[in-house]
Image (cartoon, rainbow, N blue to C red):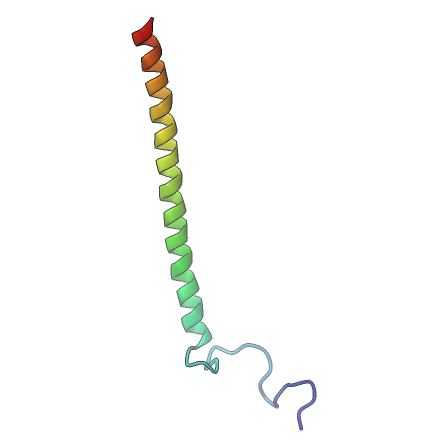
Length: 68
């Protein structure tokens, strides 16, 4: 009987079968693609925010010169 919940010959992580029909390699690949997608989304949102800030700054400056 195994002690401490470990089976003989099954120590640590493997790149094979994970017990739920997916290998660790598949899960790592999914995390990789998700990370790329999230980084792209964050970059797009930051770009939109910077464009909005620049637009507001230009709009206020233009409004000042029109009212003078």
